[in-house]
Image (cartoon, rainbow, N blue to C red; front, side, top):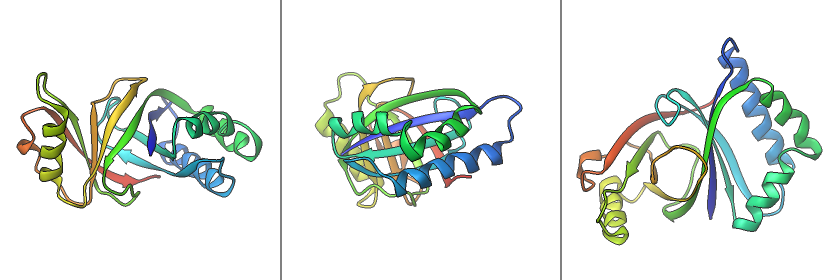
Length: 180
C-alpha cells in the first residue's frame, strides 16, 4: 500500500475553518466516486510539519498504477468542482509518497512522529526500533519518493510515542485532529 501525503495551507487571508470544510467536502466526494485502486483518504490538522501548522491529506492507494489513476481522477468527473473549490484557496503545499512498513492505517490516530534516520543505521534495525517505540498500534510509513520537504519516516499512533528511544534520529511529534 502507498500513501500520497499532501501538506498544505490556505492562502493568506482565507478563513481556515471554511478552507477545512472545502477540503473535507473534496474527500467526501472522492469516497463516493472512488477511482480504481483507491483505498481511502482523510485530512488532519497538524500543529507542526514541513509547513508548520497545516492540513495534511492522506490518500491511500493499492500501488503505483493506482496512484496515477488517482492523480487523473482527482481533477475530473464529479471530483473536479470540489477539487477546484479547494484549489482556489490553497497556498503553500508539499507532498511525498510513502510505503506502508507495518500496521493498519486509520484516520483516528492522534499523534504523528516524523523521524529522520541517522546516517549509517541500517533500515531493518531502525524500523524495528520504531516498532518497539510505538507499540503494536503504531503505523509506520517509509518515504518512497520525495516531492517536497518532509522526514523519511512518518509514524501514526493512537497514544503519544516515546520519541527518544529511536536511535537518536531527528524527531518531531505533532498532535493530529481530523479537519476541519
